[in-house]
Length: 73
Image 1: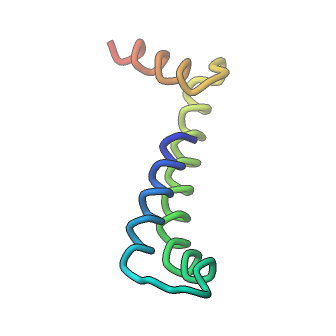
Image 2 (image 1 turned 135 degrees about the vertical axis):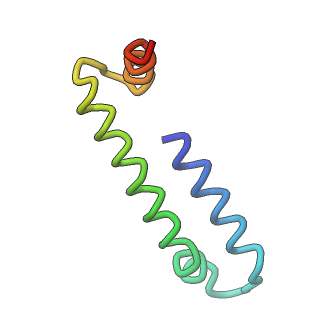
């Protein structure tokens, strides 16, 4: 969640800083950021699904990453 929010916020700031609109900012925001946000969401969902599939006993992402690290050693 943190990675998604940070990336989404960074993308929004980057995309909207190039165009200064006074009235229709919400529509411009969505139009400029929907594709990067969708791509990031798909990547993060795929990563979460892979972690859950590989470590079904893990209840949190931290536990899944820890289990994955211990399997690599």
